[in-house]
Length: 167
View 1 (spheres, rainbow, N blue to C red):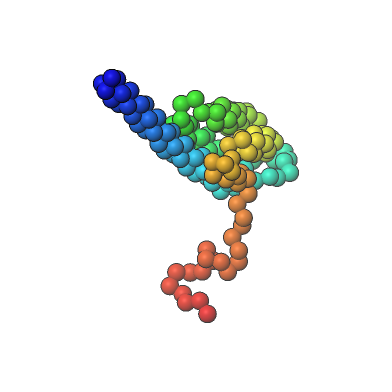
View 2: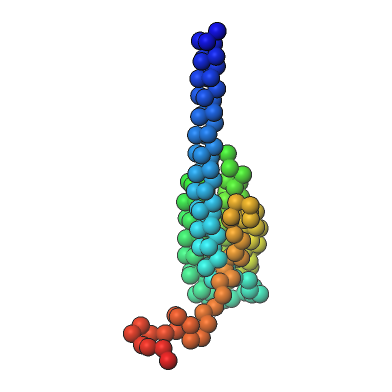
């Protein structure tokens, strides 16, 4: 009977150890995913072309190329973030929709460049919805509105020249 008790104890220890290891690994994976999502949300927050505007038709839109480059960079960042998600993550669908919206914007803005601002605001709607779905206070993914980085304050750190003393 002693061999049965020892065998059951060993088997129970094996299951407890495997469960603990799985739990630790799941926690690390969740933390890595959250860090990648926070980095993406911060990057989108800093992209000024995604700020809300009142769209209008602009003939010979020179600013459209800058916006296209920004959206292309955002799409690349979204795709990079997909690589950091856990398999089966619910966030995969959200990121795929955001990536598709970027591709749609790039296609529309190159087809009708005079109306790029309208396409940009459609993209912004999708980005805002996506960031809302990605942010989750329980898992420490913080919401930051795309493109709405606060402007630098006059006399702030960015306005000071290096080497000058502040009085």
